[in-house]
Length: 512
Image (cartoon, rainbow, N blue to C red):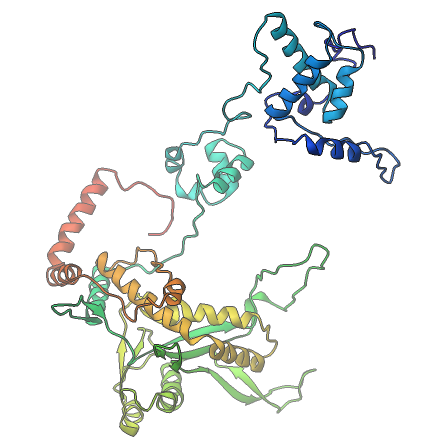
């Protein structure tokens, strides 16, 4: 290709250049002059790949400092308003840029020299350049029914944008992801019972102290849970070249599972962080040992084997509490602790009332006075096992991968015993914060579990033993409980009025 005498005109059709090389609006990192020669030598050393071809030159962009440096060299080399033959190519190789870039700078310098102006070859951009962000109006998203906002594809179609654009909006934080869990449907009686339950746990304040929840050291929470041999869907993290595991079973509908009943009290930890009592009173499976009915490849007929109890009736639960749970509480309870203990359970039909003669006899042995109380109905958030402990045990159990009923029982018991007692104490604090939120919204369960940064408070030695509440909140809840009937009627009238005005639009949830 022939260059003109002043190297100022370039035949664009013959010169193969890219948009990146000719885009003056692209951001340019600063390149120090001292590193240019070393980079230039490395750049011009031919590197050959498998095909034997020389690799592509690394793209370099010029900062305003280096553009000025190029302009100075061009002025020093020019004769009048013309450049010697090959000077543009020489400077382009020195700065490792395209001849087209140096040529454009020379055109700018040349025009300013002719007009007798101050030489200024800085980039013309002053603000952000490039394609502007797509503007998103959150109000448009709110107008879409929730039933049409359950996947990225559905939301993108409803908004009329591409899925990749929606992904960027989510990453940017303009749209947030939300996992919605079903919560128990509460009646007005349920809400009232929840507030009364929370108020009974509040210790009245004094002249110098605020009301606060009780320490709960004399409370044992019990509950039942099914633990399955394996999940239908399990997530793993694999190396790029690692083979994907294959899990098999005869039927996903009949995965072996065992029900356990667990008891948990609040751990007692002194000021030095020493655990005096871990609160783990025991976890017991509902199983039975029976002879095998027929011969199989694993056993012959008549071999004793452990089988899960499928039908957990009231008699089965009573037998497990009387013969396993209560003796375990007496054995593990600290000798210096109070003997008046309350067992908190939910309102499941198989549960006992605590007035059975067998229970009373076992609960009053060795000077103990153990009583059974029921937590409010439809309130799993009032039990520490449902609130977080069972989920933690499930996570630890899944890391063992049992294959038999005996291994499953061993894995669950091991996970139960390995859980840190200090974290159990955190769950009890979370229970008290949930009670506080329940009092604020008058018994409803429409709240987010508050986070109080317990680990940070613990490191600073500021972790509270109980949660404080204001006296105004306590008085307000007492007033609401005493007048809840009239207040509920008023609230019902307001809801009916809103429904008549059409304000209760279809949110698309599909749950009544």
